[in-house]
Length: 166
Image (spheres, rainbow, N blue to C red):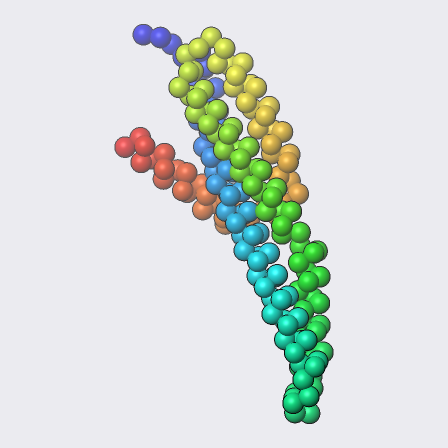
């Protein structure tokens, strides 16, 4: 019977890295979706508030006690537009999509290596993949960390792999 070219500790690193890459791929997909939803909400809010502000500015039927509505809607529309620009949700969603793709690709390469750990070059491939992992990790440092969402992604990946083993 063939003996794996990877030591027991390297096999453990490979397994952990594979699961970690899948977890991060799932995490960045979810985070990107969250940024997209926030951006849509901000744009919709800006449109609704600015439309309401425009209507109230041109209407003369507002009773005197409702005069505060005009400046409040205008200020809220401006704040929603400003926050939409400041939050950079659109840029963050694009970055998350890229990170999702890169982590997912790396996870597939770890999976391929798991199936070929008997190859002579398995140890070199593992080292190369770990270096790429470090590069990809660096790309995600500007995005906010959501530990609860990360734990949810990790649980989903672990459940998936338990189902495969069973």
